[in-house]
Length: 148
Image (cartoon, one colour):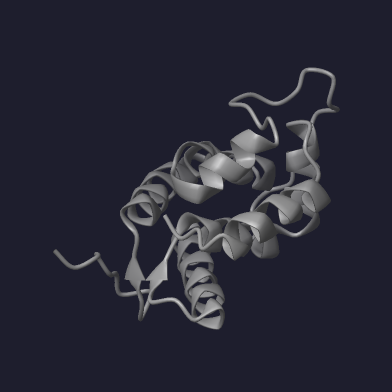
């Protein structure tokens, strides 16, 4: 059976990538802020595929660390469908640069990190992780051929 594709990518999607995009796409319209959007990406990314292994390897849990300062509550600048499209397109570019035929959850995680930038870094710190630690995890998993 061939891997699923979607109209936003020219590459196949791994099953875990389909699940992450589906769950995030369903949850994003209900986000009240950029930080809430990031949390709605982190939940499925933490549970599925290689991104889940990387995030769990850092100790990123379901809830934010209670000692972390509350996130700023700025409104999202883009509609959820546009955010989903941009992240999927960027994940496809990242997978293509890696020379693989299938977009995996690691590609989606990297795309989310790029899309949200400093806001993602702040959210990750709220879960007791750092972008540098996550990049180390991603490099290790990518080098090991991780693609879900």
